[in-house]
Amino acid sequence: MIDQGTMPVLEPAEGAKDQHMVINMGPQHPATHGVLRLVLEIDGEIIVRIYPEIGYLHTGIEKTCEAKFYQQVVPLTDRINYLDPLANNLCYALAVEKLLGLDIPPKAQWMRVLLAELSRLNSHLIWLGTHAMDIGALTVFLYTFREREDILRLFEAVAGQRMMTSYIRIGGLALEPPLDFLARVQDFVRVLPEKIDEYANLLTGNPIFRNRLKGVGFLSPEDAIALGVTGPPLRASGVDFDLRRDMPYSSYEKFQFNVPVSNDCDCWARYEVRLVEMRESVKIIQQALDGMPEGPVKANAPKIVLPDREKMKTQMEALIHHFKIVTEGFAVPAGEVYQGIECGHGQMGYYVVSDGTAKPYRVHMRYPSFATLQALETMCKGRMLADLVAVIGSIDIVLGEIDR
Amino acid sequence: MAETNNMPETNPLFGKAAVLEGLPDHPAVKAILVWNADALTDAKFDFNELTLTIAPEHIRAAAATVQAAGYNFFEDVTAVDWFPASPRFQLSYHILSFGMKQRIRLRVLLDEATPAIDSITPIWPGANYYEREIFDLFGIRFDEHPNLRRIMMPDEWKGHPLRKDYPVEGYR
Image (tube, rainbow over all chains, first blue to last red; front, side, top):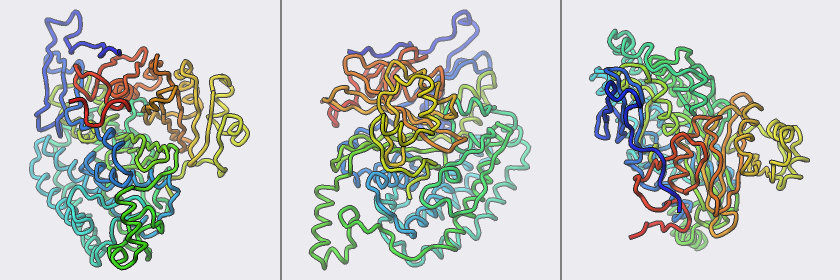
């Protein structure tokens, strides 16, 4: 039998018992963006040690996946990072498609890019609103949630769900998008750059916001790489790496966009990087709208992709395929694959192991917040307690994806 | 298209000899061979992904070797339970190179009797939480880990939920 672990509950360091104090922050604390509990050792107002206690939202999704058919895992993935739902669907679908060797039609790939970028905007809008609110700029939250509502309406139009979309499926998309969908996205991206200017007007010149972020939460590029930090915090530390550009998937190589990088390594740099990223996402969406190919949105694989309702009700063969997929699933060739994508928070990865049956033998998700949280202590050590709130906001963590 | 991994276009290769013959110039393969050819027990190249199987006692040195060869970013480590097969546990380390824009997988097989291995936190401190997660959910020990405690489950939890002999609905 394996023993249960080694470290006791955190106590002040030896020799500093009279001076240091251990306090608890969370799990119910509005600035932790979920149920994050931090055990802090402080010397007056200075942070000496941070010990994150996670797992409050652990629901065993990886274990549940092993008991489901491949297609039944898609709705589980939405619930992990609920702020960036389509990125979860996309990453899982790409991993299973790699195992199956499926060719995805161009329209589905471009729609996936468009939706992944809308999803990134959704994630960044929530980050901006809540981060500014943590610092005390309450107004921005109302503005960003106004635009987020527009995005959720687009998700609802296309998937029938505002948050738990499950729209990207193995082999393509769930349905053809509605006829007016692209026009609605066009209306949205036409106005969004002005709205981003509006947020920047509210925050960039604001002396309180500036002073709370500048020089706070320093993370050197070496530390960022060593601790597994990815996404905007990594690029704000001066490391120029973005999976969308450097290891493109789902036809990202056909889109032109810049990857913002800053060498300041502080919370302010993370704010600036994400703001530019939002503008770049708008560019990508515009390119996707302009060049949207014609054709089907599902791969031609009747034994894997569910048939249209119309066909199912008129053709015997389609009905049989539908029945087989729903009741028995589809077998996936044995093997192991890892698929990484760049989501709003950083690099997401799905590791799927198949033993040749209709249920995944093992699904493991690498989520960016899990690694980014490890860097919290490095960023806050020796700094004031009040800066902690700014740093938590700037690394943009989602507890759903940390705990899974 | 799933993902570009900047790997040469070859057919899938299975087995150490096939990979050594098919991908002789691959930087990770080369670095491992220069360091210790015997530590590489198996290899495969399929789905455009390179998997190198390393003998368990050499994992930390192997990680340092690929790090020196340019695979600078530790991305992920997780375990697979092949119960009731033997060796029971497989660890899969995913290592990314920012410079070469390429990902490799280091694979280690562990026996059920001694599910313990050297921690790679001295090389990549970012492996800390990942190894704790494996310890928690699979019960594999990581020697010289700075803080090997349960991370997802409560400290007093009995058993390791991601093992295949642990029921999906838990013990009631």
